Image (cartoon, rainbow, N blue to C red):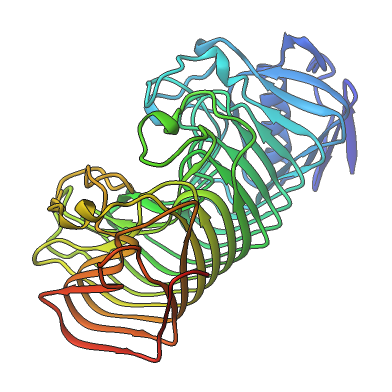
Length: 468
C-alpha cells in the first residue's frame, strides 16, 4: 500500500495515516532532515518499504537509514548535503550524510544523485570532522544501484562489517576534498559490478581496521577506475585480514582532474599531475593477513607503478602474512621511473606469488648508478611506491624477502629513451622462476636479471631483445 507525503511516495508493507505536516521540500533551500528522517522511521516501523524522491533538490543533514527501507532517487532527484557541520551529529569518522548501523535489508536505488557538498568542509589531508557521503556499519543484505555519488567531504562510500552487499551501476565523482576514496570495503560477501569511479584518492580500497573481522568473499568486476592515488588497493588499514577476493575485467586510467596533488613535482619521471600512484597495491603492515587474492584482466594506463606488494611492520606483526597471490592478464603503461616492487622485511616474507601473462610498457630514464643504490628496508614507513626514498635498481620488478614467486609469460619493455637499470632485481628470494618471457635488455652493460642471496632459482625459455 502506498502513501504520498508532500509528493513523496512511501510504500510500506503496513500503513497508517502519516502526519500531513511532515513537509518535504525539493527546493534546494529548505532543510529537510527532520521530515525525511520521520518518513524513514515511520516506513521502517510499519515493516519497511520504499521512500521514493521525485525530481528536486532535497537539502539535508545526516539521514539514518533504517531496516527494511529502500531509499529511491528518481531521475532528477538530488539529496544535497548541508554545508553546516552541526547538521552531522556523528563523531570522528562516523559522520556521514547517509548512515546506517545494524539495519538489515536496506537499499539505495534509482537514477538520482547524492551530493555531499564536500568543499564546504576543511580541505586538508586527514582533517577531522568531515562527513563521509555514505557509511554503513554491521548491516546485512545491502543493495545499492543506479545512483551517482559525488562531492563527499571525506570518503565516499564506506561499509564496515556488513554481510551481503551488492553494488551495481554506481557512478562516483570524488574531487571535492582530500581523502575522497571511492568504495572503502570492510565487509564480506560483496559484489561490485559495472561501476564508474573517478576519485582523487583510492578508487577501490579494501580496508581491514577491525582485528576480529575478515574481509572476504568479494568480487569486483567490469568497472572503470580512475584515481590520483591507487586504482585497486588493499590496505593501508590491515589489522584483520583479507581472503578470497577477486578483481577482474576492469580498466584503470587517469582521472578527470587533480586539485590537490602535483605528482610531477615529487615523483621521478612524472610530467603530468594527473596520474595514479599504483595500479594494484596489496599491503599488509598492521598485523593482519592476506591470502587467496586474484587480480586479472586489467588494462591500466597513466599509472606511476603497475604493481606494489608490501608486507611490513608498521605496527605489531607477529602473526602477519601475505601469500597466495595471483596476478594475470594485465596490460599497463607507466608514467614514472618507480618500478613495480614485491617486498617483505627481514623475518617476514611474502609467499607464493604468481604473475603471468602481463605486458608492461615502462617509462625509461634510469641510469647505471641507480643500480648501485642501497634500498632501505623502511620497515615502519607508510606503504607506497616511493616509500624507499630512492630509485629502485630495476626498471621492471624489484623483489626482496620473498618465498616462491613465479613470473610466466612476462613482457617488459621501456619507452621514451635509454634505460640502464636491470629488468629484474631479486634479493633474499627463495624459489624464483622467470620463464617464457620477452624482456627488453637494458642499455649499457648491466644484465637483465640480477640476483643477490637467492636460492632455488629457475630462469628459462626467455628472450632478451635490444628493442621492442
